[in-house]
Image (cartoon, rainbow, N blue to C red):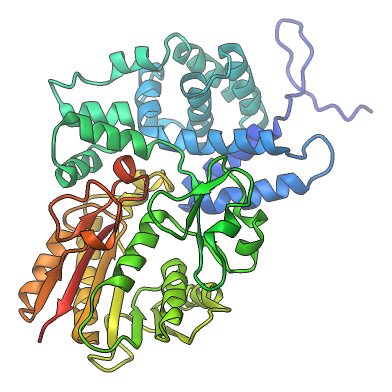
Length: 475
């Protein structure tokens, strides 16, 4: 007996087994993990790609396969809002009534049609084949019908049809055109200030694939060593930063494998450097990273502290993240201590430290380039949940630093409710403090505003949108 499964025949044509496309199947699996498990693509995709590279035979990935799968996943997630608007115009029911796996396949197809150079016929046929494999023949016909409607216009043509005119509703226009939730557009615009050009540049930058940035940890590696890697160029601002311009694999870099270097956005590096170089009154022997997980800033601070004979204490509330911090600091050339402790209930005496950094938990709106799915998960009410914690951590930091010492309050969000509002509210309770001008501590970095705090931007600085306020205890 034949092992061919029985399938109904149409128009007298024999059943054709769908062709498996390993690249698109992997992209679909990654999107399902993001949707079903609230996973992050930057955590889900690497192990999937690694497994695909280790396979033998026709399903083994080469560099081009990995690059295409990465583009399909990240491109689909970044432009989800735009593609949803287009698909809504092509589907005869609300998108909320479309099964999520079907919607993921449709979104993958929309991205290939509207966001890549894949020819129209190839984009439609490959996506329909994917649908046959992962959804079945019936729903593949639905996917085929919808994508043929999508293919009737290019991206600009669709935007003219589905985005409201800018003059009628600027925020909604930008939300659809640049694929951000309306409330995020509004918040970023408030933080950025200015007119239309600046916000459009920022939203475009959020949709660009960021370069991989490495940090050479002082005393353990040098930028010159990292620059020997293929397609490696110096960072824009940090003397320890090196950029991999062609999406290089950090794990292939020996210094990264050894822990002498790491992956760290240049904005994060600048925050650590600014705190380390802020002027102090008195001794400089004990530093604290009060929100140390997962360990990038702690590793850089630890290396800088070691050069001055200072001790770094790295505190992280979550035990598993404290383990990541310990791994990042392993081999640090100077003294350090990693503890699992709640930063709002300190395990140390008041006034114990000369320098304190708190990079507080936040909405992450400053890193949408790297975690595009975060823009669709966050809600305005999330701000209320973070607010007490952010204020509590800053209060503890101010109580943990000695008179004459400096606190750095940092967050990877430009939202005013997470940056200046927190600092202003807390400093009302601590009159014996002063804000330091952080701008001179980022030498060479342009467009830092009026100060004294600093807000970095992807479109102006090529970094995540990191915020930093430096505060000195005066009494």
